[in-house]
Image 1: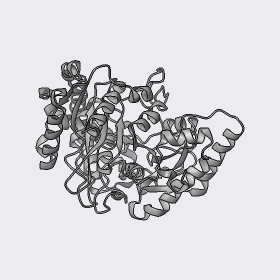
Image 2: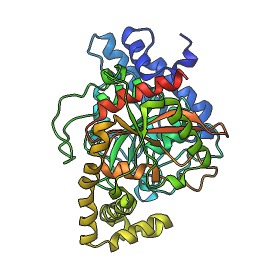
Image 3: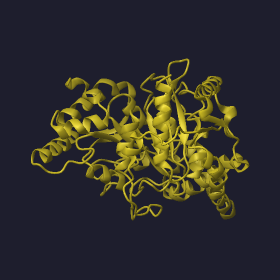
Image 4: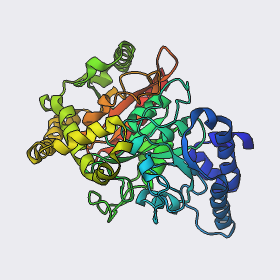
Amino acid sequence: MDASQLNWLSATDAARAVRDGAISAEQLTEACLARVREVDGDVQAWAYLDPEHALRQAHERDLERSKGQPTGPLHGVPIGIKDIFDTEDMPTEDGSVLHAGRTPAHDATAVAMLRAAGAVILGKTVTTEFATYRPGKTRNPHDPRHTPGGSSSGSAAAVAAGMVPLALGSQTNGSVIRPAAFCGVYGFKPTHGLVPRGGVMKLSRTLDHVGMFARTLEDIALIAEQLTGLDPRDPDTRARARMPFAAAASEEPPFPPLLAFVKGPVWDRAAAETVSAFEELAQALGERVVAVDMPESARQALDWHRVIMEAEMAAHLDREWEQGRDQLSESLRQQLARGREVTALEYQRACARIPLLNEGFEEIFERCDAVMTPAAAGTAPQGLESTGDPAFCTLWTLCGMPAITLPLMRGANGLPMGVQLVGPRGGDLRLLRTARWLTAQVAAG
């Protein structure tokens, strides 16, 4: 096995090679670090990286294996962590000068779960300011003149550029699905409350999700399987048996799935080539796709999402507003100012719409396995002043539904274009089976 190419191994293959002794965790980690040295000057995906510390972790994983100790499903696999997840051995600065030098005492629950599975935490990836709209330094690995998306910019770019096989991100609006689409990787946002958020910077309890990035669907399933469970620090989680994501992602569906092609309330924002590409995809899938109209209640979803997000952001970032608002970006100041003006009645009304929205989709999901819709309006926009429009993700985030980006298409400019599949709340396993089927259908032509 060519040591210089180990960084391109999938996480599944890398974990197997480490477990079987074909490679060491140190070799794998060094290959990822070499790739960082090679390309990160252009991509700039990392907020914090200590190569010596990463190699020490890898050495410990190798010692554990050599002593016959149990190896976890991610044993020796390097992973990037979005810089809003607490790490006890690395700074967590949340993309803001107001949190510069912040050093948590404990890992976020998701980080602790990854360590327990044997992962090597390579470093912290760039986030936009407080995981909102002001871009960080990261550039799209396919073309540095274009945005990588946000707010999980560094995680998506690091995976796409071959610096790590896996990375953690988060989504409060479109912050996993969109950057995955722009960078041409798989991005998965499980059902709200499925993955613990303890120790993750809080913007909105109602809307915050933990998500993940990988270059294969199999790897998405591998990391997702390590991350479900009860977290006393996250009141939206509950005790549950481990979900068999890996098995689901490798299984054939019992019947060919039926996809609901949903254009949605923001279809008029889609680029012309996005419209053409999805119409061609729907035509190619033939009878396995049906055009479905949105429930009438979905048309105001963007407004309800904004009310909830900005009100809860204003509450959670109140100290930053009071002590350092002059160091916040203008866009974030505007969001927080609006959030501080939301009335209790407006907020409660918006929150009450969420179960009604989900009920409105029940008929669709009784008939169809998943909704098919764009992950973004088009390919990654040129310029680094914006991370792109999250509107094609907003409704599904508000509903707390599982969603996944599949890197199945490209635009005329050669940049990736993602297909988003969405399932009902709690339908994560069926969604991954459906994603596997669709990926195979597109690959077969």
